[in-house]
Length: 205
Image 1 (cartoon, rainbow, N blue to C red):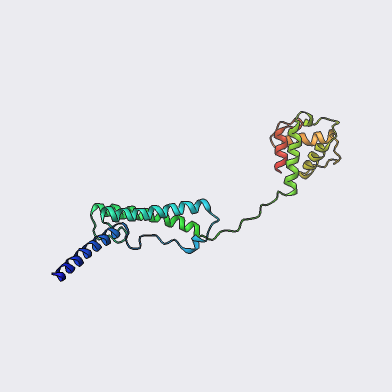
Image 2: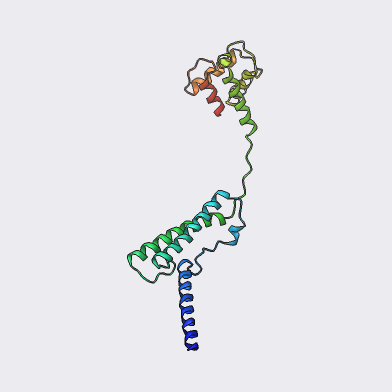
């Protein structure tokens, strides 16, 4: 009698153990967690991308568990090919592709940042000419007898374009004529005065 009781107890314990194992298996599919490469674990420079990557991994793992526990489908190695299984495996493939997409970005070698090129001396000079003119366009329209730094720069630009005029910063008749000739050659209104169109055209040379 005692042996029968012990045998029955063993059977009961075995059944309980099997049920516990089934329940554990239901919510813990084998090796369900996606293995994050060690190279990514050590990468902390792309914090926003890294966050989205780990979020995608969590969504992937949660989907694997949900399909296993609710539908008895192992989306990684499906046994059936019915409509429900096909949908689950396709959804798993999409989520895994998202993970791999982020993974590719995180594992790509970082390109060395190119040093920012400083503007050339000529570009800096032209920018300063613009700044000078646009600070007070009416003053710098240039009239016979004006003498200032802007006249000097306009003369320099006209000489670079091929005119032979005195480079002294004084807006005399020859500079006026040279400016008017430049306007005629380039389809601008030939009034011999400096306006925004003429200045911009000169500075493009």
